[in-house]
Each structure stands twice: as structure tokens, then as C-alpha cells.
Amino acid sequence: YINETFLFPSQDAAEHFRIYSGKVTGDTSFILTSDGISDLIYDVNNDIAAEACGIIERLNLTRTADSSCKELRDSLEELFIHYTDDDMSIAIISILDQNPNTNNE
Image (cartoon, rainbow, N blue to C red):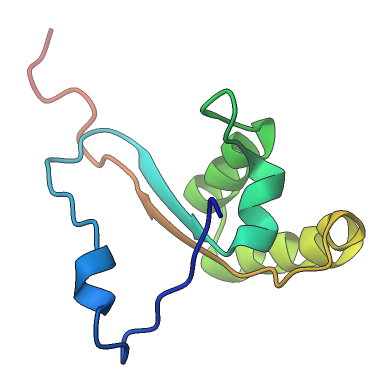
């Protein structure tokens, strides 16, 4: 399987963690999904994100939390649900760069 679930209480869960660290600059978003959504917004064979990822990122960066949550929920219920029988969980973290040009170039 491409996607496998490991529960935190599992004896060997730590063996399956992939932890990355680094510096984040500029407007950045991180989208974490269940496989029901990931199959719809990420092309594993070509290793590219679908256009929906950009739309989700822009929603999260430009709208209030309530507004972006409502629009995302509506999209999940009206569009995505027709393409999967799996669960549809999604978490989005966005960071808006408050000082995009601090070096005065």
C-alpha cells in the first residue's frame, strides 16, 4: 500500500515517524490530509500537487479562519464527496510573511 496508518499507541509507531525540520520563509502553507483527500489533491505518480492545493492555500492565507473553514467545508460536502468513499480529513497551517522585503532592495 502507498498509505498505511499507524496509531500512536502502537508498539512500533515511532519506527514510522518521519520528522523534518527547517526554516520557513515567505507565505507558506502545509496541508495534512487523510488518504481520502490526498488522492484527490496530490498526484503520486507525477509527484505534483493538484490545482486544488493552491486554491486551499490562497483561501487560508487571504480569508478569516471562519470564512476559509466554511468555504472548505462546503467544497468538501459539494465536490470532493462525489469522488471518494473514504474519510475526508484535512488540516491546513499557513504562515503569512509579515516582512516580505526586509533587506530594502
